[in-house]
Image 1: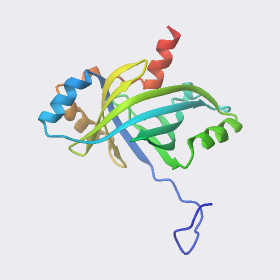
Image 2: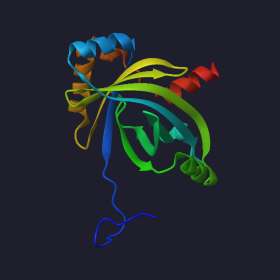
Image 3: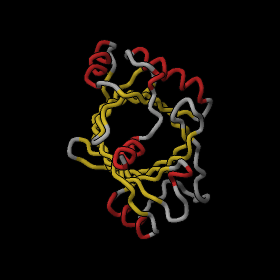
Length: 197
């Protein structure tokens, strides 16, 4: 049962729009890890993420460029779960999207709930991630099962996307990576594309 933290209930909270600005390139992650060490970047997280993506009964997310997933994150033997909705891409230059995410107590229960509502599991993406901080950006080294190795540079903003994107490009260049090699297809899209070939 949810506990109230305030004296009065004023109705449902209004969602605050945040935009996830993300730039992703294929890379040898061990080489990038060495460069991060040279730059004195701090590793802030190591996590295994298992994302179950769902198809909706009322619209085709592949056609609308949306995503709905349940994510399980395992750190040091402990697993947490989150539910995420990602809207369509907002611009062509990066993988910037409106995103809403919340933690859930039990990933299995939320899986059961959404399936009872008619959502069907579409695919599962599993990745090992190492996360570093560089100039207010998260730099993530991803080893994605069945897909490959990538570096993501991302930051959230509730304002102008362009300067955040340009900052992400600068971080990539500092790591010896080329923003022009950006991969705009999601890991899910790459996994499904490989499965269909």
